[in-house]
Image (cartoon, rainbow, N blue to C red; front, side):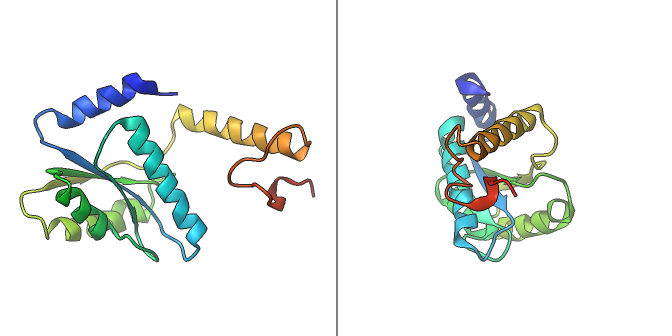
Length: 161
């Protein structure tokens, strides 16, 4: 996919002239712990792949840490700019209203720290690659030709009906 070249380019771009940049990766949040745990895995993977040191998880609602918690943690780690990344597929109301409001509230506790809310995942060619891989894995698992994916392991979701 993007590889190390992208990661170093991103790290260089983020550090040019704005001081350390913190990233808050925010999902909706769930009452189900296993759903919230997926965000922790995404953040760990993003931190590793991007080479960025200040990357924190947040849930918009229903679970901790909140956007305010993650924003504060970024500042405590030295961020002078915080980019809030909505881990959402589409630009709906949460992206256009709720997350910007929550980010503004979080930023108000940290005068002098700049912030922005980025675009969500949206449409990107790499998403098609992920879709192809996920579908192929599930079809192979259903045919007993391969392992199940980490999401469907020992679940009936990949079973024919």
